[in-house]
Amino acid sequence: MDNMGRDAVLPLAFADHLANARRRSPHTVRAYQATAERLLAFLGGHWGGRVARGDLSRITAADLRAFLAHRRGEELSNASAARELSAVRAFLDWAGVEPPRLRGPRVKAGVPRPVAPADVLALAEEVSEDAREPWIAARDWAVLMLLYGAGLRIGEALALPAGILPLGETIRVLGKRGKTRIVPLLPQVARAVEAYAAEQPWRLEREAPLFRGARGGVLSPAVVRRSVRAARARLDLGDRVTPHALRHSFATHLLGRGADLRQLQELLGHASLSSTQVYTAVDAAHLLDVYRNAHPRA
Image (cartoon, rainbow, N blue to C red; front, top):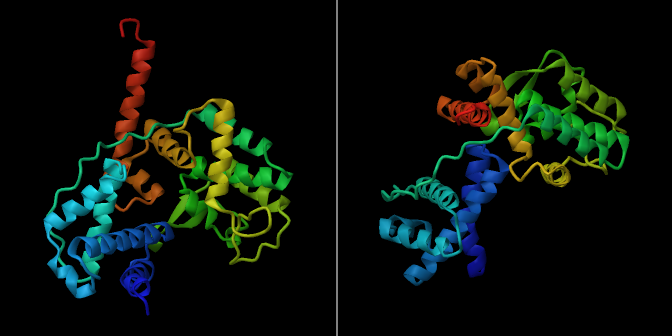
């Protein structure tokens, strides 16, 4: 095995651990594996030799600072640098090494901006009208309704099996780290999914994916994001209008209408309440915007 092959062994084993033992998402697995590869490559140059698993016990806070400085030289944002450090800590912990104490870069907490209900509908209509075939239009409408009307992550919506049909008042959703939750369905959302199921041309076996691409394969999140990006440009809605922003809007609008934070946590599938509490800031920001725009003395 050449050096490149040997150097890939540790990151591959780490990725296998994340995927199978920790049940992390494919996106997280890829990102953390890439960080492990970058760290080993950097340490190899920094220390002057190939780095084996046992060598990681030598790592110091100064080494990590040098690694982050190297990465920041590649124009990493504070948020990306913080995620990189988190991945490094997970890798070292997996390797049996206690990560050196190192304060990560400060990341200003971003407040997700909700999309107005009228803009959500306009966006969904624009995406559907741009579809090549009627069944694809019905598919795109159904997916966006699940994001806004049920608060699903895009990966959760596209992972739904055809076995959820026929629909009842709720669906079971497989969320992050393999956790399932029960999500209620508004009648409008259920009708959108059922309309798509009736129009799509593929055989919907119970374990098969519900949402299909144009050629019958699993629908890619990139296809949905690309359609939303094109539609928002035509509607001049701004870069903040993304598939994930529709989930944020679902949460914000529910909170604004009196939903309890604990209930919202369950609906969104957040592991901790702190993840849900960001929406209280969103709602407050929205109220401030209304005040500034409407108050005669503002």
